[in-house]
Length: 406
Image (cartoon, rainbow, N blue to C red; front, side, top):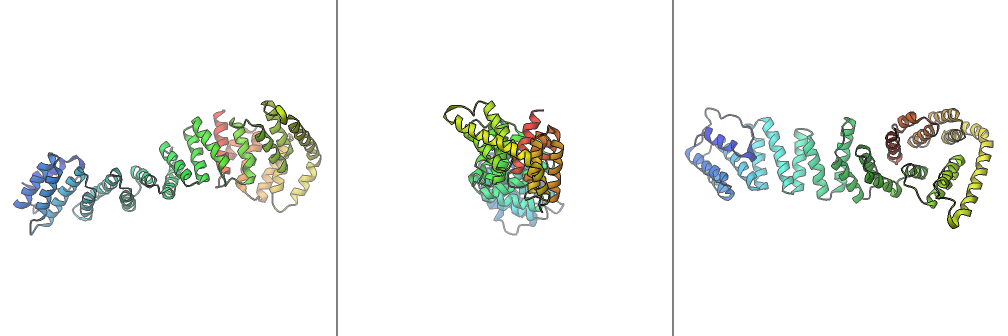
């Protein structure tokens, strides 16, 4: 069989449709090698992979083969092994072809990709991971293989690596102004849930609700916020408030809890506003707990009056502090008392002075802007919130909620 005819036969294999260089003038197949490879091709066409591989082995057993003959035999071995589902044999053949100077660079890249996809299809995830990592190192990123890498980690339950890879991919996609695939975000959420990484699972569901606004994603992410052990005490009230805005608060104990947290934070007017929402929704003021709720409301109203009387003194004391934490609260109280411009100005001054957690401060500043009727400004502020404590997730939910209400 001539070199040219054998090459045409190799091209006929759909699973091995790579573009090989034309044989040089001195590249010829000897009679014994050519005959064996012709038999291999005939058997391959008939899907008799055992007979085809036996013929390849016979060609390989010929003594005194030229480099070209060995290369061509390896090509046929790769074709037979690929179609026959012999992963190890195919990978070994590909590796030899990739190492050969006869194989064009682009073809080597195609072979590396084939190694990875073959291993993945065969559910040999460790081999798939190894092949993909080699491709990434030698060629660079590839969207299809990047996805297979994350799935390979996930399917063998290596959730930490699945999370690591998915986070990198998703961050790159968002940075490039692209929409992360829904399946990618779902996998991140599931991986994080499997290892009880509440911060990551919450972030995944926030992104799902952002890019794929479905009711079930809102329910999931609100649940994740509730059970997330990393949410600091300074954000517990904020979790309640986004839940309230999303229609996810309907129990009297939740309204009472919100009220008490706001009181402890030194924001009585906010506490009263939250209680009033509970009364307006007919959640508070009903049943056996109504008298206790009324007593709490009366205490809150008195505290509001006292705070209004002391607000100027609170401001003066806060301005003397080294940090802006107290001033941030004073500013928020001014906003709730109807002095929005003054309150927002003090909050900005507090952040300039320095606060314990700038992202929490930005979140609260955005909420103050929202309370002052500055919706567009609030959205812009929420978009600047960053960090790993959950403030960013809550801020993103406010952006979603406010944008949807436009």
